[in-house]
Image (cartoon, rainbow, N blue to C red):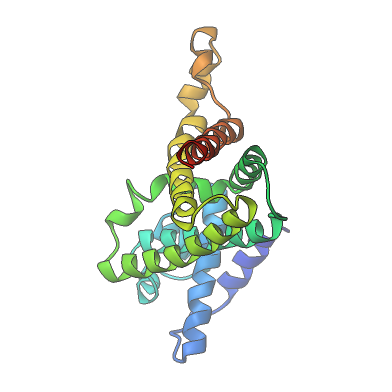
Length: 230
């Protein structure tokens, strides 16, 4: 029995009574996040419905609204949690000054190994931020900015020639790269079949190499511009 099955069985066997204390509410909140993570890993963003989360947690769907205002509010929290883990790993993996290509390789590999995060990043602008309240999106953006500041410091450790604003801009660019590349390099089944035909093979791309190329070109371009303007 894997972790997901064990967790599902545990949650289903528990009574999901209304939490009274702050600690109990936090536990319920985290239980639902774990249930949502299980669904997301198994069925992807499209399969992450409130009903699927409720079924995984062993509760009725209406109970979810005590802790999350919408499905998208759950998604943005999942994205933030995964992004925090990525930044923590980045802080550990940057040993000191690095060549732009080495930094690009590290970043590309880190994102490529986090498929759920990449999928969520591709959904945030077109879908996730369209069905959450101003208070929810404000909290999300505030937390995201705090983590981006940590990411900026880690990037400057490896590329000390970057100013803080430039390093922040690099991470914004990487977000755009990931959000655009992920759906293109993970197409639906009909396109997977189509790309097997020689005529359409040039349209088939792999995520990690494509992301590495884009980040490398971006960093080398920034480095060249700074040298020209020095």
